[in-house]
Image (cartoon, rainbow, N blue to C red; front, side):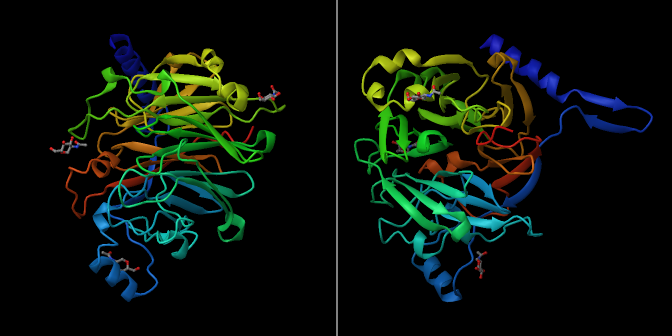
Length: 410
Ligand SMILES: *[C@@H]1O[C@H](CO)[C@@H](O)[C@H](O)[C@H]1NC(C)=O
Ligand SMILES: *[C@@H]1O[C@H](CO)[C@@H](O)[C@H](O)[C@H]1NC(C)=O
Ligand SMILES: *[C@@H]1O[C@H](CO)[C@@H](O)[C@H](O)[C@H]1NC(C)=O
């Protein structure tokens, strides 16, 4: 831990060293920092009518203070957000805002693809979504897999929405219960690999059966691997965020995929337990091999990459092999070039006031990286009482990196 702390302070010094140019009296940071783009003190929606809104308020289908955004992705000028149902009163689990809006505070979310598709009355509709990814053809792969509470009683699934066709449901794959349980399941994050007919690699953060799920679009099958490297590290528990002690042991959560290779070939998946410091990697050559995954032999392919300075939630890789990962108790984001040792990571930004639980990332096509911070620990812990207040709870930040996501090779 001492050397890890040292690395942290060293990285902090490297990143936030200030270049003073005395004759202009302007202070430049050596690295640009994240800028706040949108903020919310609570989430509200574009209701169909005042009646629909008032009824939802009255019967508890909408409890404003219980709604929290976790996943974010960007496509064609829209910012998509997912709202998992950790609590009652979350009427919509997938929505968007047009990014051109001038109102940057408490913007109303537009249910996506529609109010109907967000109606929990039918298991074929979206139930409780934690995150999603958008492939290069504009198909959104929606991970409908948060089954922690009794609010939702449907199998977990992966839903494919065509963003170039108003979110038309192209296909829906239901996970077998033995891969992702309908009671207590928690599909957390997803990356897409467009090779060999398309693959998704998904983290299962549930305490019932944590693991890494592989889904092949071509075979239309899913399989799962479970390993010690995906379990929480007890010594990483009990850290503090915003004066709250984070006690629960959370397994595999953050996931990233190395950038699309220029000449084809297989890639590397990186993952880490939320309650953990260790970063691990495994080749997609192994993951794609269903037969191998059903043996025990794949285990020798798990590589220990190194120890991070902090517990991490979301991660994303860019097209040049820079991994951005959140630093929960340090209120920040680190960057690591995967061709260098992990210890060469630098802190891109840290802000104790604004970056309270930096959670998920997204990248657009214009060279910007986006990040959401959301106090999600308060929403997941049922013992925390929530109330409406003007305090800002959710922030979307952006940072110019000049790169695109791992889905591209430049
Ligand atoms: C929520 O949004 C609706 C418009 O869709 C508006 O009429 C209502 O006043 C809003 N409620 C709150 C609490 O902001
Ligand atoms: C990628 O992995 C799959 C599954 O093991 C294998 O069939 C394929 O040959 C690999 N491709 C390359 C270029 O290594
Ligand atoms: C909530 O409170 C109950 C009763 O005190 C306790 O058993 C439980 O562990 C608490 N849950 C969390 C997540 O802190």
